[in-house]
Image (cartoon, rainbow over all chains, first blue to last red; front, side):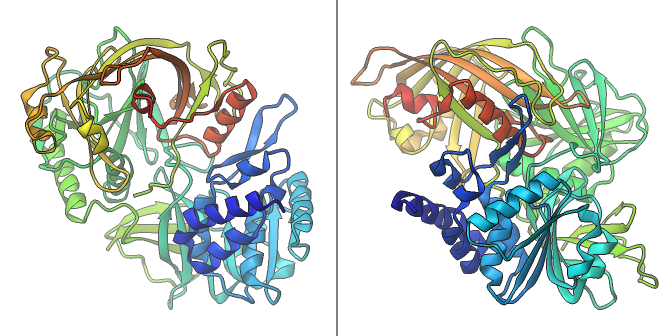
Length: 398
Length: 198
């Protein structure tokens, strides 16, 4: 291998591997990612960027290899040791399986399942070319796991999921661990689960991953309603809300929060906090059009041509949204009859979030109660409950 | 903070660059017609660029949804705090001046660079009809006013920004199409840095 690629790979490992721990960092410094990305200039393979890996007949990109920093974090959560038997759901290019194989070592075993036979075959070829011929790759629906190779000490999904497949739970050893990118009320979180004493699955760690999404995958139950041209209301789950008062009118109630956080802390941490502490949470999105009076006159934040606000929407006749004043303080503004009560609740959420240290995923827990497991105690109720076909999830901060 | 999540990528291109069609990207079902903004920004600093060297920028910008005075200050790792004032006059607002008084030790603040941007923004929509990303196609003309003042410089810049809710892989997909069409990864992190010749 050319020396400059070795150097680029070591730089990548140094830059993103720290969050993954020494074993992950060493794997990043060893596995030749460019062999998993044929057709990509080799030097580009060592940027900390998602890279397009497949295009359709018209040349349109249809899939990509994840950003290495996200892989490093998920692998750190997985807690791999030499000798581990590992199942990967979603083979991609095979690069992640190679990283796992590098850490699990010759005494371990890595199995990767992908629903697309072509993807599986290419991953197998890349793994062989890069010196990992022992990784088993086959084409199947990942929801079924890989019963013929079970049990596994570790299971990792590289595709976003909204539920835990019963097959995965049954194929993991009693002290095994599962890491999945889980859709939690509009945000994708990487959650590492282990079995608790009573048989439910408790999160051992929670990290941000992928992109913040309010929708996207079919499994994501987020509801988006167009209120008028260029203005949308998004709710983390389906709910009936009556027509909203006009947001451009003067508010019926206003309450300062005393908090002036930085933009990214708001669009990540506060958004997540509201989603997991407030059943009535909502997001408003508005296009900015030259010459049109904005419906959100004081947005919480804006990009070049779109602006956003977060808030609480009542079932009937009221909404409170967050705005920013010129000094950067977050202000809760209420509209409609219920406005006064809603602004008090919204301002209190902001202060509680700020008092917690402006938290995002720190201290966040996700408990998973499989429906198939009989006799589990009722989950604690002081969290947001998310019902999915195979699992009841309870999300809370401690 | 999720400081490693990429939500924005910047490219540069030649004057004749033609923006490729982006409406067939995965997760994208439509692209808006371009909306044009004429942005006229003047950056203020001391003659020896004390603010900029301390990662502080102070500008007055007309045009676009956020016209006015913008003071951006570092606020911890990778974060910036932004303080705004209405457009007013070309006189630095007293409240913003006081925020940087310690840094500039009472020294005068005057225009150090101007940046004119002819911006065409296209929004990318998902199948629910909501915007998931925007692509800004900028024609930039910049002039350094601080000594040593130079000739005006012009360039083309294309920025892709993901909005909350963007599908996985959209940034990489859009980037691949822009590269196919001849765009290159941008060398300079900011328009101001390039305007100042840094």
